[in-house]
Amino acid sequence: MSSKYNARIAIIYSCLTCILLNTNKQVEAQNTSVAQMGYEYLLVATYEIPESGKSWMCRDFALIQEKVADKISFDKRRKEILQQYPVFPVVRFINPNQAVLAYEYEKKEAGWGCTKKVISVLTGKDLDILKNEMEKTMANRPSSPKIVFQRDIGNFALMSCEDMVRYRDKVLPKIIDAQTKKYKIQDEHIEYIKKLRTDLETETARGTSNWNILPLTLKFAANTIEDAIGMATPKGYLMKIAKQAGAKVVGRLAFYEWVKKGKDALEAMTNKDTEEALANHMANEIGNLAPPVALIKRMNENLNEQLDFMETCKEVKNQLSSIEKAMTAYNAKLALSKKNIESFNQYKNYIDAYLMDNCK
Image 1: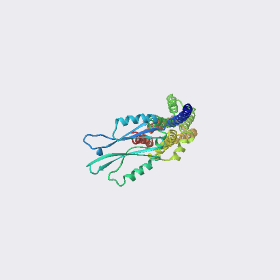
Image 2: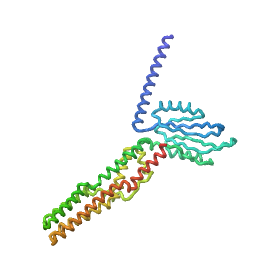
Image 3: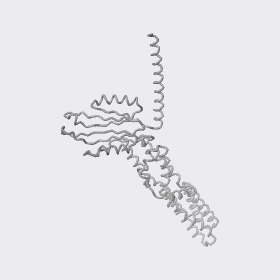
Image 4: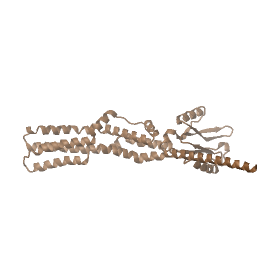
C-alpha cells in the first residue's frame, strides 16, 4: 500500500513539475516578446521616512520608481527595499500594459499637531482616468495634489526614455540633415556658372568680338540653372509640397501622439513634417531663381538685335554674377534652416519636456 501510494505521489509530482516548467517557458516567452517590443516593467514603491523626534503619525512619505527587467528582478529588488526601508513600505510591480500615477499632497493629522507629506500611487489602463480619479479623491481636501511620477501605456509602450534621448540626439538631426541635403543646389552647378562668367571675362579681355561665345554661354547658363533647380526640387516637388502644407507648426500634443505610436511612426511623421516645413521655408527662395532663367533665355533669343559686343558681354556677366550670388544665398539660407525653422527647434523642446515629465 505504501509503495503504491508513493508511486502515485511521484506521478503527481512529475506532472506538476511538467506543468510548472511549461508555464515558466510561456512566461519567459511572453517576457522576451515584451522586451523585444520595447515595453518596460517598473517598480514603484512608497515608504515612510523615519525622522528623530517625529511621531510615526507625522512621518513624510517618499517615492521610489525604477525600471526592472522582469518579475525575478522585481522580487530581488523588493526584498532589498523591504530591508532598507522597514517602515510601512508598499512595493508595486507595474506591467507594461499598466498606466501609473503617483501624486503627493499635504495632510494634517488631527490630534497630533503635524502636517505630513503623503504619496499615493494609482494604477490602471489609462493615465487620463487615473488623473480623474486623483482629482475626485482630492476634491474635498484642503491641499492640492502634485504629480511626482506618471507613465501612460501608450507613451512608453514602444519608446523608452533611452529611445527618446537617442531620437533627439541622433535620429532627429539625421532626418533634418537628409531633408536639407535633398533640396541643396549642388556646388558643381554654382562653380559652372562661375566658370562661364570667368571664361567670358577672358574672352572680352582679348579685345575681340567673338559673338559665337555668347549664345553658347547663355544656353549653358540657362541649362545649368534649370538642372540646379530641378535637382534641388525634383519636378517642382518643393513648390508643390509648400503649397499643400502651408505655414504650420506641429503642436506639443500632436508630437506626443506620434510618440505613442512608436519609433517607426514617429520617424515617418517627423520626416513628413520636416519636409513640409522646409518646403514652406524655402519655396520663395527657390522661386527667386526662376526669373533669371527666363531673362537669360530672352537675352539669347534677342542676341541678333544687339550691336555692341562688349556692352552685351558686360550685361551677360552681370546676370551670371547675380545668378551665382542667388544660388549661393539659397544654399546659405538652406543651411541656416535648421536654426530658423520653428518646428525643428520645437521637436527638441518637446522631447526635453517629455523626458522631464516621464523620465525622472
